[in-house]
Length: 444
Image (tube, rainbow, N blue to C red; front, side, top):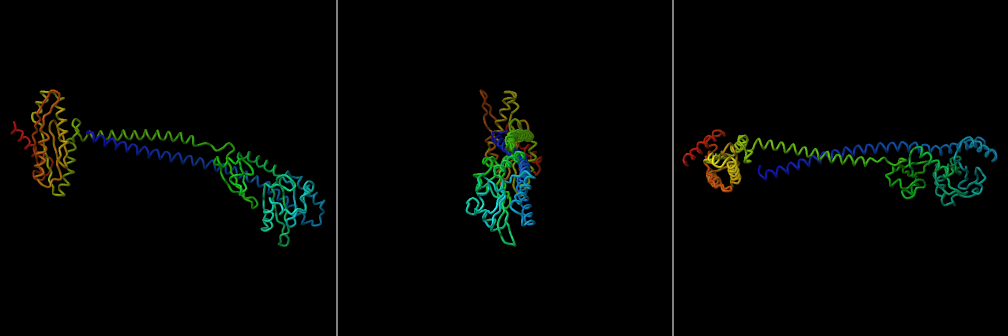
């Protein structure tokens, strides 16, 4: 195997091995990514299910309070002449039956508070037009204009403290008359939200829309930086942004993923190396099957295959093929006088000279012992074969020098031509062989 062939095969094998390694690595990486994505999706779906339970409980408190208020309003409609004292007693009995977060219940005529329960602690808000309070003005007017329910908060209350307010329009004979409101204790409501978040195993940050993502009114703003799940929720026509994560943070799959990626790289390299070894082994077997082990020239086994290949082209293009059969004169004497090791060195040098012959479309073969063969194809004129004959003789006639050994190497050459001397390889070789031995006889 010559150096050029070795290099070509080396780079070819390396490229195949690397390509297969990369393909396998990409496949394994994609498989790991798919598993990670599925696991992330499963985890997020599980967290989303927990949040839906959390949201349902958070809204239930508001709905329960609104239902109480609507029950009260129904009672008032049935008993329009009820006194304020009896009305307060009714509410007191109603609210005492359930544990609620209701801080007070108010009624506004147009936008001005005219009644509040309980009156104690809330009396200073009576008579105030809430549109004069900047933090409540827009929401009061929104309910008046749209006649739709609204839940707002947290807001600073006129009577002090912080609350969440559910506002319901009062419509009489199809016309807006005023509003009723339920004020939930802000601190207690947020404390309740913390409790149900913990029971749902969630960390939750809640934003009013205009404050997202900088300033939540409840929860840890850093949740969003930890790849928190961002959701939109709507409670009584009021929209909030909510960011959630598992109570103990997201399960870390990336570390495990990178471990498997490292193993994938290792596996890919091992498989690539194994493929490289297979390619090298197959190449060596093919090379040994087609090439002479001593000289690196093609062997007799490959000769028939190669001849059939160039024969088809010669037939199609009406070209000649030249077959040069070459024998080293007195080679047996070289072995006998200097030993087989020197004889082998002579054969190797002879093969190198055949390889180096400057004739186009030439291929050299060692067909046994000291017998060599050269096929020259793509010949349009017989004169070209005569020229090739002279070059081959000149290159294969040389002095072999090794240490103190100086041997004159003299070839005998027989030339036969397709289709003049025959069409089959056997016939042409027989003609070349006869001519080679005729030349050998004449040079003795």
